[in-house]
Image (cartoon, rainbow, N blue to C red; front, side, top):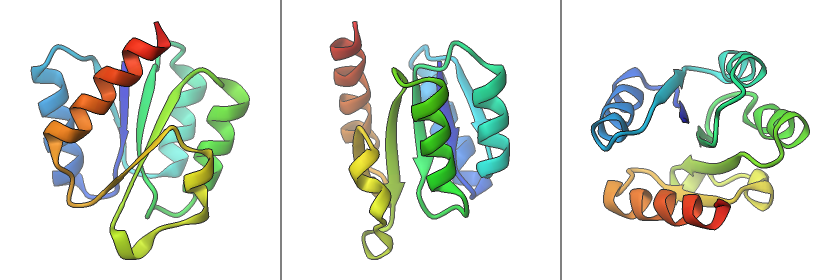
Length: 114
């Protein structure tokens, strides 16, 4: 299961649809509070795509590392909005996303986790 945490509804829906079309179960969150709620209630999350531009993204990373340390966390952000959180991520992607590149990394991370 993949959780997409993205503040822009269109981007969140598009990314979720692309992942669903490839057979992944996807849950969505629009902000940090919703993401933390989903992390706390969903034990089967394997990977999180996290918009680093949302307020509280550092809290989401911290919660994941505490509650579910095996979950893979990929950050997403514009190149000019890079943040310190990159050090605690398993991967980072610049917006606008290149889906094929992102998907290759998702598949590669899943293989490493197995």
